[in-house]
Length: 398
Ligand code: ADP
Ligand code: ASP
Ligand code: MG
View 1 (tube, protein in one colour):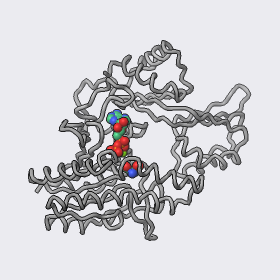
View 2: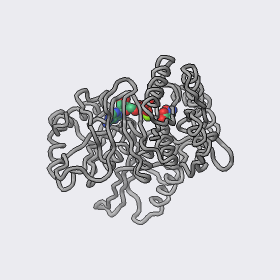
View 3: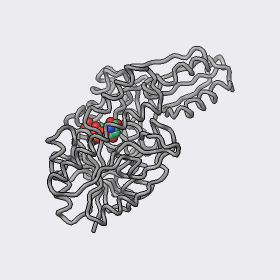
View 4: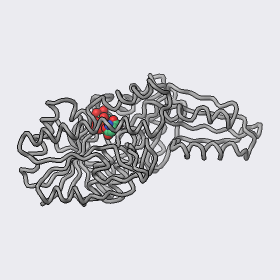
């Protein structure tokens, strides 16, 4: 029987009515003759609530305890959804990440999945049961609960689909697919019937949270067919495709927003100072990703470096950074807007149109970087939405 992994995000399991709606979708899929494995997130807002509780106790809570706390959200959803399925006569069984055999490294807050021992899940399928697995969590070699980073239930779903060699992985959420921009910010954004793996990878890594970046990476590595769908309507959604589309790719696929960014500038360093490699090593040890890095030597022969990082990550490393170099200048209150598209290659006029569009609305980007597949700008947080809407219109994405 074809196997489908269905993942339901927070808004899809927000309350009892939503849970009943999800149970109906699962039962309908089984009635069409598919085996189903389910992955669920915490009920909408629950993970934020738990994180705020932890932060109310300590600004930088212990990672092991943080993971133990925030993983509880998903445990509520798996039990409730299994109950809802059983109430309809569909045999189901809930699994925490550990019970489902999801083994990770021991980074409690952004763990990586190392292996999945899916025997119990296969047995359930053979015996006609629906396994309902908690997304976002696993267990490390020390036996501790780990979490996969915000949005990590997507990664659980794609990883389970890869481990079980599922025919498809369906990511159900509150929008009916991947759009040319977040439809909550750009109302006339357009749903894409399909999106190339490279494009969704870039959109996810630059902030389009409709899919977690690691989920996309997993899909690429194990060639898992993934479709993004709505829990609330019957739209065909968006299929992620592998291999390039037609010969004439559209110039641009979409625009992504990373709303909470910080920019760090360190000026006047002695050339070849150890401070730069030491700082980068520290950031990597703390699992902090940086972006838009520039380095230049000024007329006084001093080294200057500038890069962006997520504001929450900055909070984790701020004290270390200032001990490594004096004159660290931090700009918070920034957002990053990225234009993404395979067709961007060899089109320098894109940057020209970008500047013209922003000039017309009196917005000056504080930093800009371009690569083969994306152009990112950093703007004041208050200007991000208006910049996105203007660029979306100027590039004819609507
Ligand atoms: P879930 O809880 O189901 O995992 P998320 O909130 O993590 O849902 O992701 C879905 C949200 O992603 C949408 O509600 C939308 O606001 C946002 N989003 C950002 N960029 C895009 C995009 N390009 N296409 C669709 N949704 C997007
Ligand atoms: N509940 C977790 C979060 O809010 C994981 C997820 O929803 O994917 O980040
Ligand atoms: Mg999500």
